[in-house]
Picture (cartoon, helix red, strand yellow):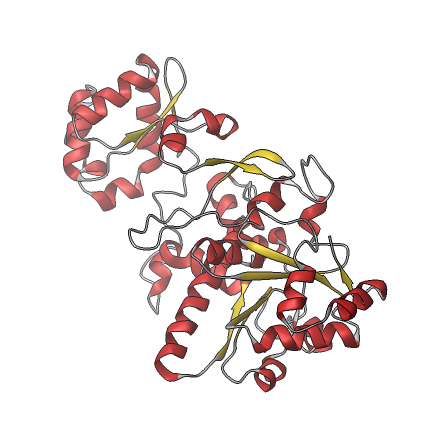
Length: 380
């Protein structure tokens, strides 16, 4: 969550210094790589950052942290509260160094809760936030989403929180501690639509957004693949029923307005799935687009670098890394006219910027060498 959030802040122009342990962030050891420590995850998440490797448990490492905080606008940490307390990374600790500092912390549960030091792995947060139960509501078996959604959603909340805290500081001159409990973030994310009838006290309906909690909700099979067709408005559905010969559904009381359709989406999907194999995917796309009915071709992520839209519009970009060669990266997808996102720095090797950053902090060459010799820092 922290690496994802700070990669976006870096894309937006922030100077980001990543403090790594002496053996590096765990992402440096997971997944495909050409050279040790430079994995696909590292290339994607550590762009637009400088890397310093410091043992924060040593007195000398703690002093490096003090100097870093003196010049920092924001400190982002996803360490558990107990670990931050041991390292001197609490808000009172940092505020004593820089009174207007913003500390953004993310962990599994709220700091004030008994679960404050529980680990925050994605599967645990998916379960604790009810996401696995939403999948169970669809097909009867709880499962995890096939991506680290809790980490990434929490990362988005971190970005929002940091930017909001900076606006507050610009207006008032005051820093603050911003806390992002991942379970809270995911419950908030899940309940936007799914609190539904339970919004009211007492409830006036069931929990869950009926349109999406049906097992039949999936891309429709065509004669040569799959297609997503999503008539949404009353006019969309009337056009679709007429064009496809499903004219008996025009007057069916189950489908005459949006709320009734949502209550009966399972049956509606099953009816549509019986007719879509009669045409190819492109034929369905042409028919729907000619009649203003929302439709899309499912993207095969295994071939994302071959997709014309993705490549022509810079959703995914090809770069050349000085040590890792050519690679693809998806920058933060914000198209800003005055301050466009950009790749200013390729992902660094572990400790690649240690000496440079320490020099900026006022350390002499001799002091830096001594820190490296005493295993306080790692340099490349």
